[in-house]
Length: 317
Ligand code: SF4
Ligand code: SF4
Image 1: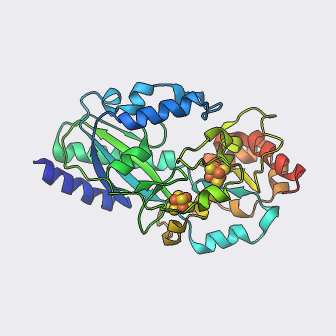
Image 2: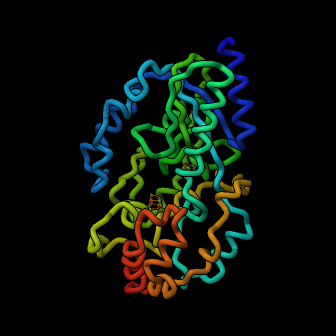
């Protein structure tokens, strides 16, 4: 089949899989991104996330990751919760610590990785022999750059991929394949304009005006990536966040277009949105492991959650 026919079939299959967007870019070296990533690393914004320094060549060129790669397919998956779920979260206010929306349901890595796997298998059955690999925020792939190149949206000042009339609460997945397809065009411009709401709202001043995110000053970094138990900075304001942070997305005007997702795997884990700080502090290891075995929160471990919540309680947040 021709690249045109294959492309139409792939995009139709993506709709059947429940993806909210499917776009395709030519696999090539990302020269501008390579310069930006290098400067970002030189400034030390990765902090303790030293894995960001690894595999630089692969990160900026998918052909080093999948030999013979010709196309990078980008998928978006909405994870914005329903209004009812948001109200549940917001009612008890400070007694309940904030958890980033992406972590309310099952671990998206697992959910989307499984979908990528069967998607690639279906492509092989329909099109023939294909070398390819799927990635979901778990390998050296600059997923937001690929999403932008494939026409999904633009990268906002808050560093998120923003989709016109849809917002930024999307997981991004990439499938790198060695077949030629028809390539989408990036949007002609970004639509942040003169807005600075995310910069103004960030409690740790992690967002610089030139779209650089100082990763090592972000609440997501402090609450998830920083493993040192004594590592939380004395003077940083985590507001009421115990796992991740949504502030720069919540204030973004484009997220007024967000609609509730339909993915059952992303429904909030039973009782999660009612767990108070005291509930967390009294939780036993066995309960945590059982309750959160499918959750992204497992990553920070119970001792990490307790460290974060103790930090908030000490400051009466
Ligand atoms: S996630 Fe929170 S701390 Fe990080 S850049 Fe956005 S507003 Fe700032
Ligand atoms: S809040 Fe404003 S500046 Fe920040 S990403 Fe959204 S539109 Fe862009």
